[in-house]
Image (cartoon, rainbow, N blue to C red; front, side, top):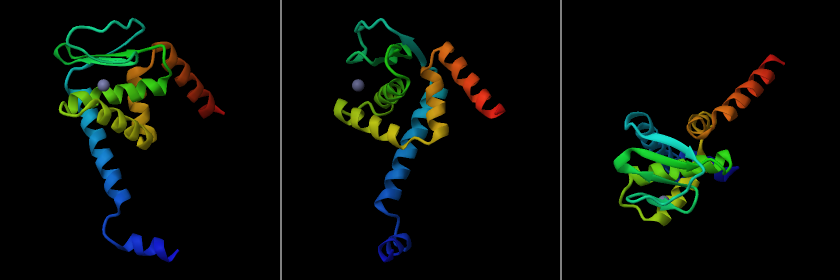
Amino acid sequence: MKKQLRYALGPPSWETNTKMKYSSIFSRLKKILLDSGYQVILTDRFIRRKGGLARGSKGYILPDDLKIFINKTIGVNDRVVTLIHELLHEAYPGWQEQQVDRTSKRIFNRLTVPQLGFLQFFVMLPGEIKAMLKSNQLSAAR
Ligand SMILES: [Zn+2]
């Protein structure tokens, strides 16, 4: 109890700084998604294309074509992590793959519910969105 008080009264904690850092990275990714004209394409055809930064079989980004391909056969949250990953490549071109990978998971783990919802809409298939809206309506009408 005493410990918590001391931390609360002190300078911004490591946790606060970390929170701010990841939320500012998220804002940057969101801006890219909304303003840069990137198209997110869900596909199950995974061929490594020329000029693309391939990342296993989950997704890749083609900066020259403004396209991000995401594997639609993986789970929705896995697609969200992949989208964050590919956007980080765009936002921080100097980062190594390992840093992009690590940061994408950390951002995902810190997403708020609205942030997660925002990203999910980019990586969900029309049928999945319909099903989600329907289940939300049902639970709201209860
Ligand atoms: Zn990558």
